[in-house]
Image (cartoon, rainbow, N blue to C red; front, side, top):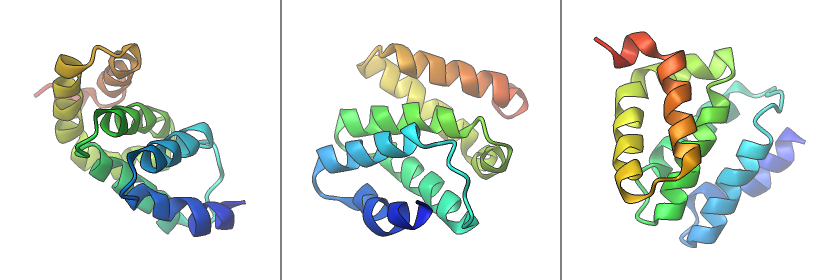
Length: 121
């Protein structure tokens, strides 16, 4: 199944059509428990989610932030995210000013619980 994701869905993270990006982000969120045989795939997902936190379409940015929350639940992914935590939290706080989406608040709570040392000096 992972090969299908790599071949058909991973490239859509870079689509010029926002709904395709949004759908890809949501799909990866739905399958966050997928066992990755290819660790480079996991790294690429995180990279693409972080890039999409800066997308010009609010739905893409918001879904990307929400989806990151699910990947925090994996020990392997947590270490990939650790260097970017202050930047991610900053982006989530900015998004909350634009869009008071309840799932963004849950994402922020997950980051505070998982990365206390990185957030609070």
